[in-house]
Image (tube, rainbow, N blue to C red; front, top):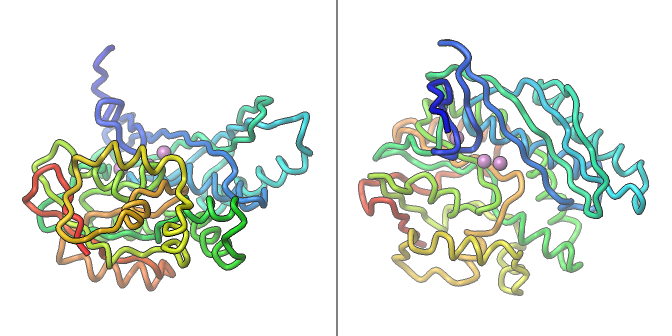
Length: 315
Ligand code: CO
Ligand code: CO
Ligand code: CO
């Protein structure tokens, strides 16, 4: 492989997206994400898939510019109007993001999937990666967790209309404003919470570093009913894999139930940003997020000097 000095963030440091420098003032951010339907309504699903795909650009502190649709559609078994609605949902989110759809690609596939490849821009010296946190930083989470448990409960016919509405409005919400506010606040590090779950992505912030992390479970925003669903064992397939993958990085100082661990490792779709911000800026950023309607945002922990490369989880 050729070492390209313009590749600022690439495979080696696998962050939320790749970043490539074009000039001293400009770098492009590239990312792609596509998912299988997580809700029944096609328009809502399109919005969620687009918000989810755009999120990696926001996690880096970038501004999305252009996007291309990625579509796998069962052309023989599903009505084309479903696809029209999905694409309309994606289009509306791109419009809200201020990004332009420039094309796309679709194939016939037994299982429906939709997402986008997104290109964004950023100043090469202002990239927010997941590994830039410093001792004394506070950790802010901008959306509640539990979308995987709720969608499993929906498929099982257990979740009610209210749960569906709450997770849908959260998953369709862009991380745009949160990203802009974290930049204003001088955030040191950020990642968005998706498939690896809250603790999985949090682990990525301290992995192989001289930093430790503490997370307080009682401060974490969780969607209503999620604890019930976890108690009922409505755990999505990816949770156990997430737990096993990061188990050696987690230290529990108090009684954390197995059900709670399933929530903390619940795979998220279009989850919030996990932001490391200087301690003295944390409260102001939190208030600012709330003032901009990001009401569930909370300070859930902090960056410590110990234990290096590990996370302390306490009640
Ligand atoms: Co990401
Ligand atoms: Co991603
Ligand atoms: Co990042």
